[in-house]
Length: 317
Image (cartoon, rainbow, N blue to C red):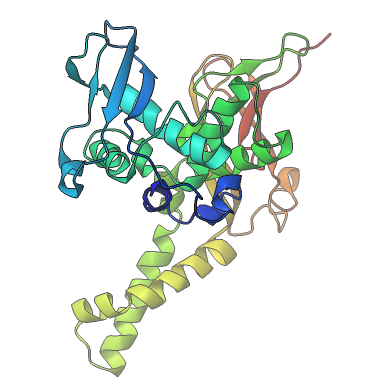
């Protein structure tokens, strides 16, 4: 059934808390009738205005590895484009989890598996998205349809969580500006490379210390001790970096909302310099909001760690 295929595609369906009511009941009282399932999708890249798929009940299990084909308006067999397959896949998930027009999408187990396999072996990124990313995409789709499936607070919390994880589906590539206040905002992205560099001193020192102790006490070869010390050194490096070397470390990058020049911002403290008031002007614990100056346009910006937003200051009246 479609239930099993969707659970394979996304994992446990209980994570969504949006199971359709038809799943709660018992088995259907009427035996299923043989029929052809027809799916309509918009053809944005095909000359034909619409494409349709005719799926027969006698599809064999091994046919899921065949090309996912459709029929155009003239009845000729054509291969669906990648964007059309992605749209059909999201329509299947949306119809199942959020309900809707079930006559638009009606695929049996084998045909759904064939669509999923075709996307997995293509360059589509949808199959790599997590369940929360799929929920975010479906929430945007439903909102544009005028049928929201979550409240504003739930949507904002989900988007913020995805932004902190660096998910590309929740990050905007262009700034948003308020005409009344003159404030322009841009999403910040976590710089994983520079953030991991902050853990390098802890890793290097931990491996060296573990190798020396292992060599002089247990007489273990340094190469073997390096391999054996990966797990304990990992915990040591994490403790050393977050507690001694860098407190609450985070490096983010963002285009300037005014001139689009790339800006790098560091959150946290190094060797407790700020917290111990070694620099009186910046004394105090690390703050979630700090000022940054664009090196190109010299605009003063506010970097907000909690909301992962880079914003300009309001214009003076």
